[in-house]
Image (cartoon, rainbow, N blue to C red; front, side, top):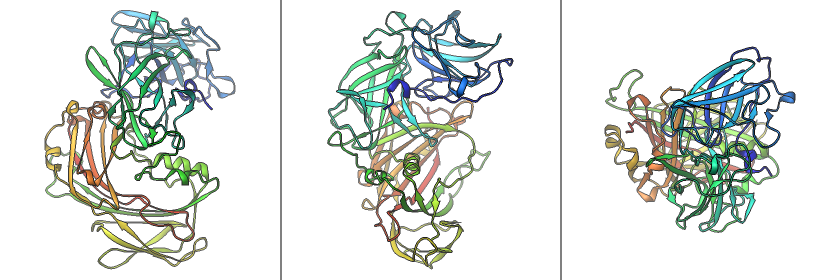
Length: 552
């Protein structure tokens, strides 16, 4: 099992002969969260581990692995030909180095660094490059395993056994004492940044939110003895934390009374610890993920999107919304590894909880998940609750696509296909959940949202037996290079959900962030029984409404 310090950062190395070129820095981020510049919760804490991305930053490593400092104390005068310094408010300090490579460096921000905006300088091969950097007393990042969709799984262990990670098959429970790893609590005791740090609490006690509920007890918040800059927080899972496979954890610290929130990776919480988690909104339950052999999955996705967004280049709200319907049916066979990767990318936050993360703001061509696609026939016939049946032709073996703008009615739909080379004829029913009515939609569209007060979404109606409410918000950072967002889930029967300040405080403010909010009624993924030829039918259908929003 990997240790938490090994999971703190990931290494990406591109080989090449770059030594003679000027170092170029494209990003300086917290070594655990990776939160990009240009969002409200970006900063590098004094005493924390940070990562520098760019080119020509260091020597080409032998065998492709980064050149890591072999032992403590960490070097401050340079390592493998690379050195770093930081200058803030007229104070220049050498940076202890953890590892180097041509495209990525890691170091420890000196504990004596003043707060403020300054300059980080990297020198390699006799030339230097620099980048702005914002330093605060505290800005915590939670160590996590991150997937391209932006979803993160927290590096959390049981307090009684810090080598035992909390996972979807070995979950924690309310009342458990857990250990959270990361970096950014603040300057070390005695300013020790190069060797084994001293134990002891650092600064003001942070607040640890589990599914939006504050932990009743944070018993330790200081350095881990394993590595300079590596922190650990020992906390108790609150008794009323949401139960599920993707419950968010957020750490909130303060700088002179101004709160700053961490990233928001997820963990698994069950009524009984050391058991597999269960979650009605989970795309794939633990028992299916545990299949030791390939899994045959029929995925159904009927999506009605109702958009109230202005036309590109305009700020005027449209007189009536634009409706777009998309249909996607995938008949697939996944290996265990492919299936596990898909489950991470398609994960939904547990009811009563929120994901939060970021993704690059670039257009990514739509791509099918890695799998073997199963010939199920030349077309699929879909029969709505009322109206004429229609066919989706096969775009490729096992892939059926379509689009229109007439709306997707709720109710029982028919699915049939004559069968193909891999799967025989199919004929069954699947439900589309009756959508909720978003009752405070107009006020959300027209009134700026105070992030520090949270945001309550209210609805009525819906179909609690077949669906749940999903709430997603996105905004661009100040440079437009990243989209920052959150994804919350709630049971339809609740009638409302409040997105807490600990989630909203990361969102960029003002109209320049081009923020959107989407409230959707999702089908419960497994509200259709399996049919012959498939291990599961997964219903990803939804009815979604998207509007503009402004945070302040």
